[in-house]
Structures are given as C-alpha cells and as structure tokens.
Image (cartoon, rainbow, N blue to C red):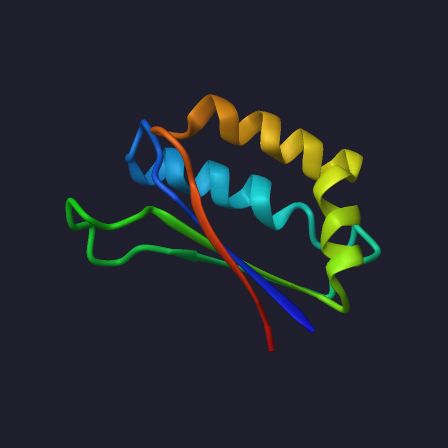
Length: 96
C-alpha cells in the first residue's frame, strides 16, 4: 500500500476558508476508484509554523497513485488548491 500525505497552508487562514477547502478535498471520496482511503485533518494549534490542512490518502500501488494524480476529479481539486494555496504544498509518499 502507498500512503500519500500532503500538507497545505492557505492564503486565507480563516476557519471558513479552511473548512471550504477541506470540503473540496473530502469531496473526492467515492469518486476516484483507485483511492482506497482519504482523511482530511484541520490544524488545531494555529501556530506560525503550522499548516492548515493535512490530506492523507492511500492507494494499492504506485501506478494507482499516478492514476489518481491525473484523474479528472483530482485535477479539479488541484485547480482549486492552486487558487487558495499560500505558496506550495509539501508531501511525502511511502509504502505502508
């Protein structure tokens, strides 16, 4: 199994903006056949070094992760993220 973890810091760090983007991420659930697990977490500490949202997804293989990356539903999410991100996201992908 491949676990894909992404951290996002938003331009607008208001609770409403963070919740809206979290909902966009959660909306992928059940719409991408290779996506085996999705979890979206919101930061509770709100420190300067904190990221606002963590996305944890799981896939059966690297090929499935690659298929997810170009899936139309994920492409729409990436377009949204491009508008709301404060800079770039960070990620790690590992075998679990």
